[in-house]
Image (tube, rainbow, N blue to C red; front, side, top):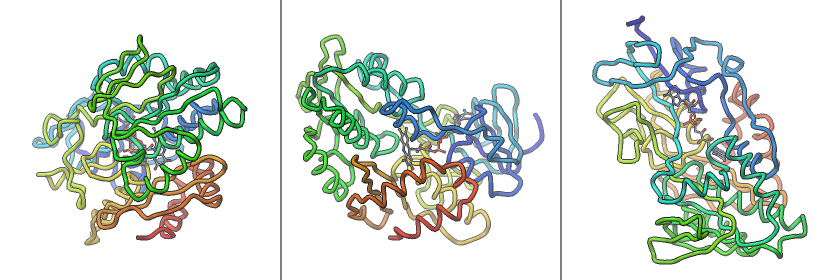
Length: 373
Ligand SMILES: Cc1cc2nc3c(=O)[nH]c(=O)nc-3n(C[C@H](O)[C@H](O)[C@H](O)COP(=O)(O)OP(=O)(O)OC[C@H]3O[C@@H](n4cnc5c(N)ncnc54)[C@H](O)[C@@H]3O)c2cc1C
């Protein structure tokens, strides 16, 4: 076994990089060379844009081990990778969430054919070529399972696709239907009251609650647990997501790590923590959440008596150069924020300057203060 790592951070995504850049005596273990700005997959699928990514070495100068973690033994404080074994004093797991298409019969075939805006760059490219080839028909967009990455992404995709078809002058050739397992298109009631009317105004039919049971991609039919059947020509569906398989204990049935929602420690351990999409925390799986959790844990590890309050801040493009934000925490329902042009500019700013902002966190922190709950 190699030397003992004082603070081992697993995963160099939003959460892992945010905490690794600021914590002392850190070793980051990440399997990939690049950090990927996942929202760019949405723009690949809709507009054919290239994936936005940056070499981790260009953002983070501390200790970095390029290995894939296979297992973590929390009791023995051991990390086993594809190449080595390490002991640690403290571990912070930030490995994100992965798609789990196997949970729904027929979903894999749908994604194999139509691609996806929420899984990978290649799937987003596939989706983009589908969009370019569409002439007419019924498009079904939606959420197949209540646990998924980035709650607004399906609503954003539907409104931006509607805008593309309208501006191309072919909107009348398509019916757009949106399926959701929630009461409305969006999980948070107050923001659903903002977003669903905009979707309806643009002729998007919302079918909810619609819990996808199975899909027959040959017959082009989706069946719900509620007993409905919908026919489609094109299906752009967000799959269920699951957590990690590197822990044998402390995970729930979907593989998310059982994490204290305020202190962020893995339940039952005071030397092991989890941040970001991999946690069981009842907060949106978003980069903003991952960032705010990492900042809260950093303050705690630096001796401040503070906890994570569940704050999140999800931007939502609604088309026609407008956007809104979903802002909430554990103690307050989402704020009612109507779309504006200035929010669109803020969102574009984030998309364009993401890697600059990663290195100059004070700009993000000042911006988040504007929406303080
Ligand atoms: C289409 C789309 C649009 C989105 N839009 C937004 C948005 O506008 N705003 C927003 O806030 N969020 C958005 N998100 C969500 C956001 O990208 C994620 O919530 C965020 O990246 C989660 O950060 P994380 O650090 O938990 O995980 P990730 O960023 O996924 O990072 C996990 C890291 O862990 C590494 N890893 C995994 N397993 C191992 C292992 N075994 N060994 C070593 N390394 C490992 C991975 O390689 C990866 O680098 C969007 C997501 C998608 C898909």
